[in-house]
Length: 411
Picture 1 (tube, rainbow, N blue to C red):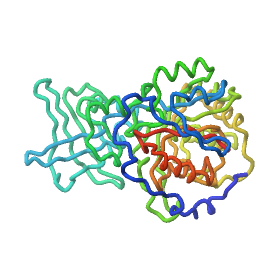
Picture 2 (cartoon, rainbow, N blue to C red):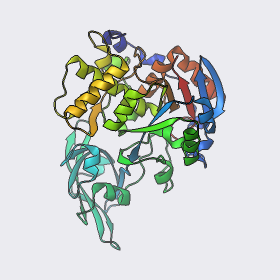
Picture 3 (cartoon, rainbow, N blue to C red):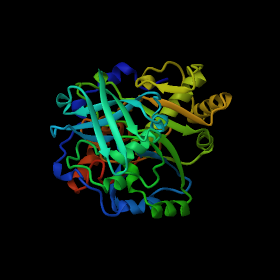
Picture 4 (cartoon, rainbow, N blue to C red):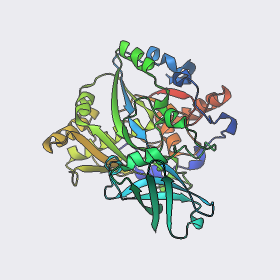
């Protein structure tokens, strides 16, 4: 049976999950060396201080480390009107001709996206344009209509055969999170990207992965710690504040994921500890469990794109399968449908009251007060989340995207 009913979870008061974060401890820039980060370690209810370079010394041989290999796109576009007014267009979600983000970024001109528009009042009508006369490149944006969460913008460009991903790489800027108040710099295109980034689609980095270097991976390999990859495209919704007094009033954002079926087989066969690098990897693996559990229960997916609603774990009726059984059910469904990849969207909300089905260890950064990411950490560590964060604040750890890391072992 599900451990906690949804009505109990929905009454959770957000006021209990906040803390005072001094601006001086929000890291505005990364360290010069990625793996020079400090790392707080929480194991057996004890807190110790370490360096990220000690990761291979702390994890046991036989651990499977799962990372998110999404690649951040240069999703911020800066236009200027003839009057000098600056209009910033932040690409959020593709609308047409393709809604799946990786495929949408491969499209040629024109495309339509849902966007956030800064200084929209200055853009009453007409077309905005970015031009480079030397190369003959031009990008045009036309506002078509308002949407619930933003604006529908049509983009077209010359040369028209370039993909939208290439266009963003040429004309866009790094979408730094809102709590980094400085302007994006050219070096952010490199530092706000993991060294293993592969599949384009995120508008925010899976920041726990920013600390990894080839040297770190080499030491993990020597320790017989396996490394696996999933893809979850991080949306701007990851920064969406919880404005309701209780979590029941919050609509969790949806994010797209892609998982290779070969990985599912290795996951099903794995017998050692499972460590997720970042909340996005954890959210992906826990979502895979629930999708597999639904299939095993007889709830067949409608089509080949899966979807997991935010309250599924808390509304479950009946017995729950073991992790291996759920993964096997998902893998069998993929094989029956001749799929090499499993694609879907998850709105999974992980909050205190959630029982983790897949994850034994979480490597993550420090998160904003009152955020769904902090709720996830609280769910994983129980009441000790406040003790962990108080220690980090007192010891001068650097917080948020470009900050330090923490390694949390499930109790």
